[in-house]
Every structure is written in C-alpha cells, then in structure tokens.
Amino acid sequence: MEKRKIVVAVSGASGSIYTKVLFDELQKLKANTIVGVVMSDNAKDVWKFELDEESYLNYDFNFYEKNDFFAPFASGSAQYDTMIVCPCSMGTLGRITSGISNDLMSRAADVILKERRKLILVTRDTPINLIHIKNMETVTLAGGIICPASPSFYSKPQTIYEAAKTVVDRILSLANLKLPEYQWGENN
Picture 1 (cartoon, one colour):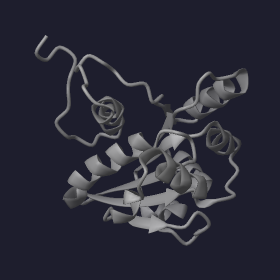
Picture 2 (tube, rainbow, N blue to C red):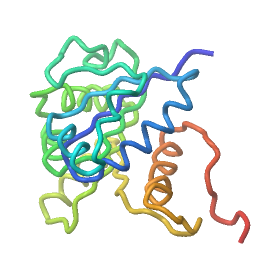
Picture 3 (cartoon, rainbow, N blue to C red):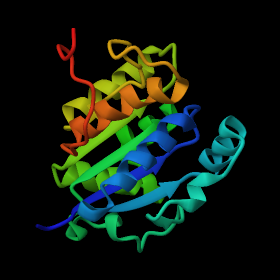
C-alpha cells in the first residue's frame, strides 16, 4: 500500500492545542503516511506561549522552513493529496483565497487547490467579519473545506485535550484518515 502524503501548515492563530493533538494523532498513522510540516514564526511563538513548551520539535515529521520553495509539496508533481492548515488565521485564509504564493504555506495551498486535492482550513478566529465570510466562500467554491475549530460535546470531554480532540477527529475524518473516534449515535 502506498503511503498517504499529507501537508500540515501551522499559522500563528491561537489554538496550538489543536495542532498538538493533530500531531499526536498523525504520529499514530506514521506507518501509513508521510507528513510534511511548515510552521510560521508566529506559530512557533504561539505554541510556546499557549502550551509552555516546544514539543513540536520532537515529532518525527519532515519540517520545512516557511520560505523553502524546494519543499516537495511546493509542486503538484510530488503528489501530496491533502493539506491541513491548523489553526488557520484569517490572514492565512486571505492569502490562500487571493492566490498569493509568497511563502511555502500559501504556495502549498495553491498547489493543492490547482491540483483539485483536499484542502482543510481549521479556522480559529471569532467573531468573523464579511471579508472573512467572503474568503471562506471563495475557498469553498475553489474546492477547499472550512472546518471551524469548534469542539463538540457529545462525547462528554473531560479535559481541554479531549475537547480539542473532537475537532481533530473531525479533521482526520474529512481527510479520510481513520483512527478510532467518537461517532454520534454510539452509546447514546
């Protein structure tokens, strides 16, 4: 079986817990996936501020600098089939929507969209204004998926990590990456 190729982009929006949980879950899928990661400088700072640590350095993924246009997923020929931007700031959404490929994150998203592959944007900001809504509409019309970082509570999460995992479970489901997760209707 050929390994799935996944890009994870991490913008500087608040919500590092979502990225940490996503990394933890993708690590479990390491045998079946190749994961390329690009993090903005702000993402690294926010991770350190929100989580009081820098464990993103410890994951066994391929990390690329924000301006490394030689990264494999900067080209459609590398066959990365899914890109997850988690969390996705409204600025990152705007650059993706406009087709501005001024860094690896926006270039990779442009490649994913032009190749008609799966782009999942985990938006975190609230409230949102009309510009954000129009950008979400444009990305949706281009084939992207807007997946707001809105936890569900059906599974009765007891910790912040468990609440964040409800969002990550949804992201992984949208990406067709299967791990055991809570399903509505189970044990009700």
